[in-house]
Amino acid sequence: MKNVLLFLAFCLSALTLGSLANAQTTAPAVPAVTAASAALTATVPAVADAKAALAPQPVAAATDAAATPAPVPNKGDTAWMIVATLLVVMMAAPGLGLFYGGMVRSKNMLSVLMQTLVVFCLLGVLWAIYGYSLAFTEGNAFIGGFSKLFLKGVTPDSVAATFSKGVVIPEYIYFAFQLTFAAITPALIIGGFAERVKFSAVLAFMVLWFTFSYLPIAHMVWYWSGPDAYTTQAAGDAATATAGFLFQKGALDFAGGTVVHINAGIAAMVGAIMVGKRVGWGREHMAPHSLVMTMIGGSLLWVGWFGFNVGSNLEATGTATLVFVNTLLATCSAAVAWSLLEALLKEKPSMLGAVSGAIAGLVVITPACGYVGPMGSLIMGLLAGIICYWGVNGLKRMIGMDDTLDVFGVHGVGGILGAILTGVFAAPSLGGTGVYDYVANKVADYDMGAQLVSQLWGAGTSAIWSAVVSIIAFKLVDLVIGLRVDTEVEREGLDISAHGESAYNH
Amino acid sequence: MKMITAILRPYKLEDVRTALDAIGVQGITATEVKGFGRQKGHTELYRGSEYVVDFLPKVKLEAAVDEALAARAIETIESAAKTGKIGDGKIFVYDLEQVIRIRTGEAGKEAL
Image 1 (tube, rainbow over the protein chains, first blue to last red):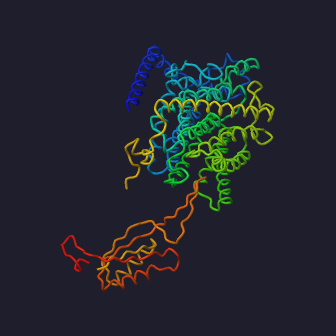
Image 2: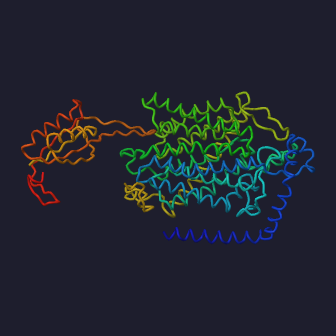
């Protein structure tokens, strides 16, 4: 308790100091903000001109940069990104909470809801303070810098690059969208050690893992200076040299197969092994207390995932609709594949199986959704249903761990599968989009062998990095706070002991 | 006086209740219980975890009756609850020492 209060006091003082420091440096900007809004109204008639200037392809803009006005966000793109961000918030609250919560025993339902909600919110705060800066500013190949600490310099007029030259979105919504990713990814890990870890230990671990695993991997995979820098080969190469390590390796990860799923899946496996099995595991009845909640949560996750994947396109274009289709089809085929497999192997297809299959499909398509074609996503979904089924059955038994909610089996295995299959099905010959060359302004020739190597770099690096950080973070937290609750507390249930509440009082 | 306890299939409660009412058994108590005799349970499967569920849901019915009515009550329960398959349940009969109606304070046969 004392530790928690000290921790809170520290955070509040750091926040206050930081905000004050930030306020001082941006105080002179206050009049500029009003000037900017005046300028905005002045440029409203000019927006139509800007759009007309942008309508012909960027090739003209590249050779005539001086005369082109600075790009302004399109209202359709901005509106879509706002909606996409909301959908991912819904994935966290209550999607993930219900999906996970329904699978634990009723005496632990609230602990799962608490952990998913509070982890999401805590890391949202940290993202605003330092996470966004460390992930998405220029630093070195492994981590960014502190130039946007406390969101310094970011205003409603700031813009962020998309995947199209000359197209931007407001930086605030890019920041918010990325916040939801940074905050939901750690929440996934909770499933690996559910029903037996101290609440304070969960929060402490998450802060460490977020800082030393999520931020670097997000930076490595996704940080680049944007397409507008790619005017000539030389300029392009110089720009790539400032990008994240895995971006430079050419790893394709559209919406977070490595950054989110492999990252979290590996951490959950490490957690499940280091925390140990639940008391009575393998002997006692530990069936899900409400598969109804799990199905509701899973469905909310599916709907929200359209925001997760399609929002990763950063603009509302034809490609965005391809991403939508892939997110839809992979899920359909994966759910059917898992159910069919279960019916064949176990005689009865289960509700838990069907929902798990759907989620597996979503995980596998996540890195691929902007790069593969619809038929490719149907096949990827089918493979997801089969291989992730093995992940939660055979593989889990082989490893012998109590990965309570199958985070590694679904997210870890699915993430690795998706990362590799992205390299296969992105090929134009297999209906994919190929990889765009921003210097030549067309799709490059596709080298599947080289791309698969890049994909393995991405999957391997994130797996190993996450594993190392997780091992150290779990060990550290165990030494300082202690990871596990006492056996008696575990038997009583975390809801009563950690939160003083019962989920169901009837 | 006798206390008759019957373990029944849950969906048989209504039939037994109606039948007992017809022969003049005024009040009963029903509880939801779990149990098994020779009836086997079932297996539930949650992803990789299999659980054998031995305990089956049943209903325990208790009725306090006058000795004169006891034999007919037992017969009535038996015929109303019988399906002929394993799992029909059992009837237990105890000697009942005393019965008191709380509202009026009546005791013995008047309280039944």
